[in-house]
Every structure is written in C-alpha cells, then in structure tokens.
Length: 155
Length: 112
Image 1: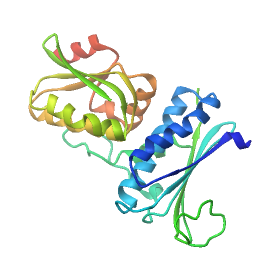
Image 2: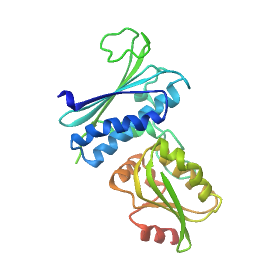
Image 3: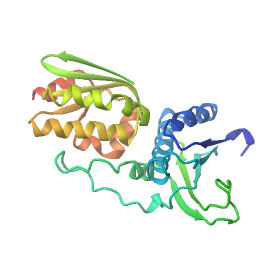
Image 4: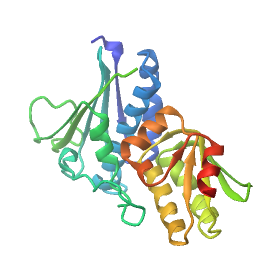
C-alpha cells in the first residue's frame, strides 16, 4: 500500500462533519478508479457508522472526535474509525426482523445491518486507555471504540 | 436536496433531487411528509435524480408509505439509479414499497 492510497481525517462532534469528511475522502476513491457501486457501498457504510457514533455515542456539544482512515488495497476499500464515545459494538447490534408488510415494518435500525451486508469484514474492539496499537489518542488516555470495515471492490 | 410536487394522470408525483443522506433527509423530510400524507393520494416518488441514499432516506419513505397505507393509499418509487437500487434491495425495502423501473410502470401499478 502506498502513502497516497490512504486518507486520514478527523471529524468533530457535528453531523455536518460527515459531508465534509466525505468530500475529503472522495478524491481517493476517484483516484482508485472504483466503480460507482463500490463508491456507493463505501459511502453508505461511512455515513451509517459515523452517524451512529455522533448521534448515539457522543455527548451533545462535547469536543469528542472521530478519527477516520480510508485505505485502498488491490481488492477492497478499508475503513478504520476510532472514537472516544460510549462503548458500543456495532457488530453485535441485532438486526431488525425482515420486512413483511408496511404495517409491521420496524422503522429505523436499518443502518448497521446494511453496513454488515455491504462489508466483507466488519470488526470491533474497545481499545484500552493506554493500549498498544492505537492509531489515535483522542482525548488523552481515554479508551476508544475501534471499528474496521472492508468493502470489496465490485464491478 | 430539492423536492418538487406535481399531479400526473390523477396521481401525486414527488420528484426528489440530490442526496438522501443525513443532511438531505433533514432538509426535505418535513416538506415530503407534509406534502404527501395530508393529501392522502396514491403517490409515486421519482428517484431518478437521487444520487445516494442511506437508512435515513428509507426511514422517511417508509414512515410516509405507512401513513398513506392507513388511508388505503399506496406509495411507489421509480427510476432509481443502480447504486441507489443496490441500497434499496440490500435493505429489503422494495419488498414492501415497490420500486418500479420507470414512471409508466409506477402509474400502471398505482392504477391496478
């Protein structure tokens, strides 16, 4: 992996930061010659995961942050997210029941199941306060949620 | 994100234009539901200019479709690009809110 196959960005505790980060990452995806379908799947995963952290994991108005690392490999787009919000394992989040009718359909809760379906790999770890291998400190010595996702490149 | 309402062949048509993401849904959700639910008509949503959609977009469409269903009316979508279609089908949303190829198919389904 070359250095120019990787983009790092930091998102503030603000939903508007999602669009700013997407625009920062977009040139990498274009440079990589990814298909529209692959870019779409990546952007859905990126937005769903970050939305959940800001909406449910962060304290409103706090200075909490998310570190995002996007990397291109020969056959996948890899995403690493680290945040210092509430401990939350999205990989263990239960999927809603399948849609059967409008009357019984659960409204909401579709984001993480879609991440799971769009991903070849979807892992979570709660990194300890001063654990080794951390990419980003966030607030000094605070433990972080670390989510790694790989989205396969498709035609 | 833009939204446009019109009447076509006695049906309500809503054309969405832009990204149905966090910001986009926030910008149009109230106008969308206020423009569709009180009217209580069979409704087709033109998705051909929707560039991108997350689960928030599905939630907006689903809650409005359910409100119409209570009034005995239907909501259908048509014209989604391949990427948005991939998202809709992966979520299973087309199982309960039909996704038609084009406007003619949507009209035919609503009038059936």
